[in-house]
Image (cartoon, rainbow, N blue to C red; front, side):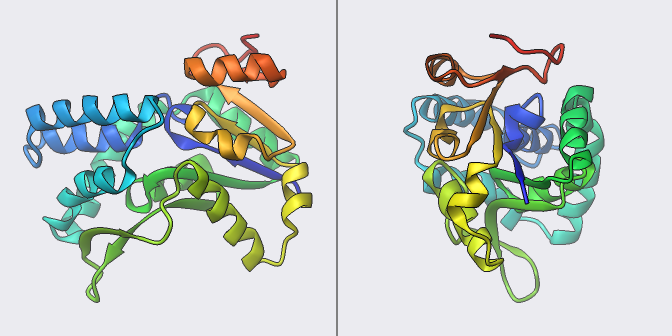
Length: 229
């Protein structure tokens, strides 16, 4: 079994699904647009610096989900998929997923964005396995505004993947030795450094420099699909 592991935001998507979801809710008047812009700038700077407080960020992004019934959230998400997500999926991203599927690889998305937002996106992309940050629900299936388990972020992605492989009785070192992992962010270096085939996709400056230094492939999925280096 060869793993084909994909980050989602700014990798398979030409944009950030968390940010797009909150922007979408802002257009509906569900969240305050000015507060969103200020908070997004603050969190984005922390993310790019590798200093994001994930607990604080999750409280911010999950709060609107706790304020509305699940049925209403599902209706909004369906509209969000059509208006915001589909335009962020490029032909190149679909082609990359298809290439690995045709090769018989095991496809897996691993993302810090919560499962409610990303689950339908993984289905749209044809990726059957999703490791995402988990949003807590009460006994009635309504969101509480809290997360649970290990957030799927930075070293947390490594641990979540380790748990997934262990639950299936799959060997850690052998599985990673043949795995591809595609990501845009230096926050994913903990996992990129472990796989046999790391690929930087439209990378941030830090990841681009690291990829060039180590001879990793650099790929663009958000413009012409060709190596950048």
